[in-house]
View 1 (cartoon, rainbow over the protein chains, first blue to last red):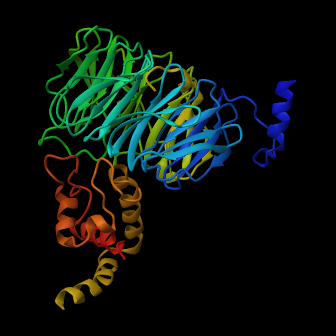
View 2 (cartoon, chains in turn purple, orange; view 1 turned 90 degrees about the vertical axis):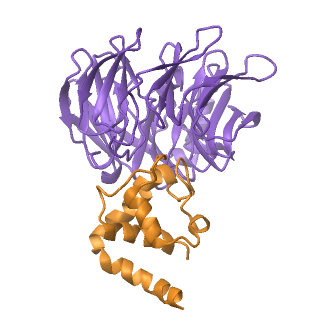
View 3 (tube, each protein chain N blue to C red; view 1 turned 135 degrees about the horizontal axis):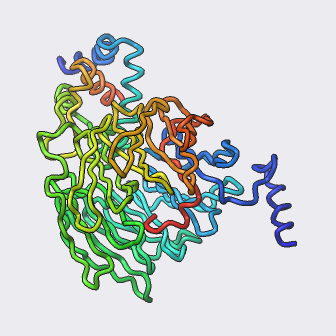
Length: 381
Length: 100
């Protein structure tokens, strides 16, 4: 009965003049970066079902979801944090919490939203329900690579000062700990799917830093000492992203910085196993769920191509050209499809991952990130 | 006086050096690709702000050189492999024109 009442309430809302959608498990959102809007998409129908506008500068936007998959939290470049209701396609709450921000994450219990900021630097933590400020960790450095860590914790790194920190919200008082000095200009960081290792990529010097978060006293360990950018390398026209660092076949797959290569690293020994020459400089490397394959997109100007690589023999098995300026890829949670954004062709292109044939297209305005609600249940995001 | 005269000529010079279709592509590149680091509204990000206040008084030639050769020791890459000097000039003037 309560459900019925909700359905009537939703039907009455002007935004839902057509068939109402009362479940969100196969929904997602696409960031339309130039127009500051969010396209709400239905994964099963291969269709856009609405647009939410007024989200500010989304030139570097990311999204995380509430545990019930109803609300999308959008982190905008201009410091805006917006809570979007995907059912009514409206803004449920919005705060401008800093001058310039880069991303964020939701705590494992779904109660806290942490945002990493560039200007002023530092991290702010909000109540996921009301977006009221509950924690403020100011800093003089741009923050990057913010992840959620089980136990109402968040970890992040700092671009200017090269440090990593952890904030713990499990007690009555927030507790902030420095995890260590991690190297010069970390550009992004990621948590392994088992929440064991926090991996930090460096731009200012060679190497990757790993921090064992299962350890009682976590400390940074440097590996791949010849990894990263130096003056001899190619210019980097787009910073690689590490959120998609794939973990497959007992390996990490890393984007080489300033090279047209993927690097395969043994997960246990942290030693380099192999390299795969690629079409361009990798930006996102994302594992196709329940498969041996990873999909890779590339930095401008070679960004019209996506390659598929087999993690067993490290060979490129397919090269696709979905459209101009491919910015992001998102898999259906079980891996059957991949949705790819082509910014300069103003469309989302959908591929079947078995046949690698195009099976759908959705018009979108300068689309960048694609986020399906299944992310609500993934650690680190 | 010379400076004022030069400023008055800038928009003309900028549009004269690059063909119209290329100018459209360059504008898109500035907004989208430069915007990845500097923000779509040029208010900054990993890269410095390139807004009116930020660029106030900047020399267009110096700006074009930064575009072409990057800033060593930072994340600003040299765009020379992708742009001609005329196109870098056009971008410098495009950014400065936005001040008005």
